[in-house]
Length: 98
Image (cartoon, rainbow, N blue to C red; front, side, top):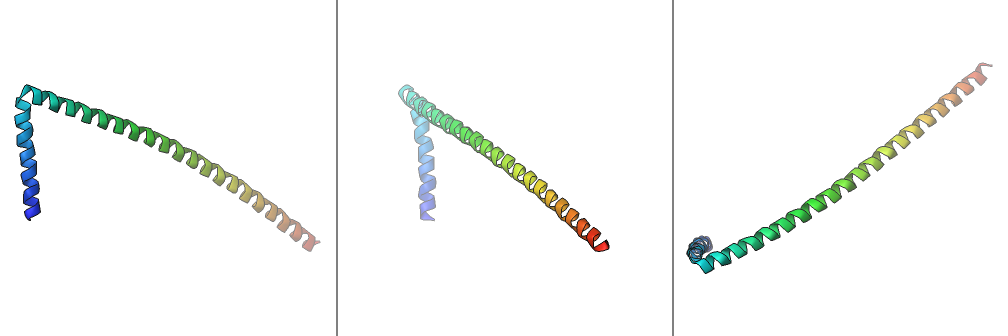
């Protein structure tokens, strides 16, 4: 509980100090500079995040396409096997009938 009180006291003190600094023209300039740097940092992080997201989206698309191609190949191979087995069964039945 004591730590929470100190934490809240620190936050309140920070707001008061920032308010007092903002009243002074030099303090206002310093806070504007800090704000510009924070904005630049967050913009760079956002751009990097979107770049990585696009990279992953492309990778996922490529994997999905490869999986679809593999499934289609497996389906084609399986239907070919079924046809071959069906033909073999018919041939065997014809030979038994003769």
